[in-house]
Image (cartoon, rainbow, N blue to C red; front, side):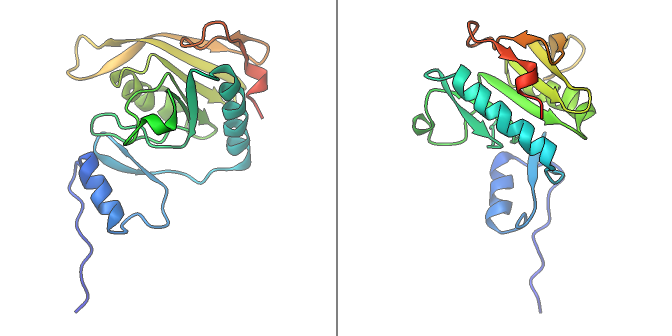
Length: 190
């Protein structure tokens, strides 16, 4: 008789998610936990990877001495554990005993996920208190910058960003945590 794989409850805690991972349920898969649900992630194509590499390089310089760049590393936010393409975490990696819960900046690279990144992920990061959230839109060749998270008056436990600005390749933007650093959008695009 073969052992049956464990069943997955409809909504997982982060602890349950990690337990299932330790049992090998996600072996060979790219997944993240979003609001208690396991979401399978698409394969990373080269333009997406190149955008992530360029982001990490530029943001590493901009945040030197302030924070460290975490590429596709988990960010612990309530019952979610997204793996943003790039997150700038305060301090040093050695300062943490578990996955970070706070980021100075979170950036998603969108080639096929723009709608999800500007809605579901934006609400998730706003609810987590991420003050500065960017989406690098590879197809539109622009950078969406979300700031000023505010609770939604009609929804429990939901937050949205009050500002959403869009910048083109010739524009520059400064991260909130390092306002003297200028990031040229064209330097981020593949």
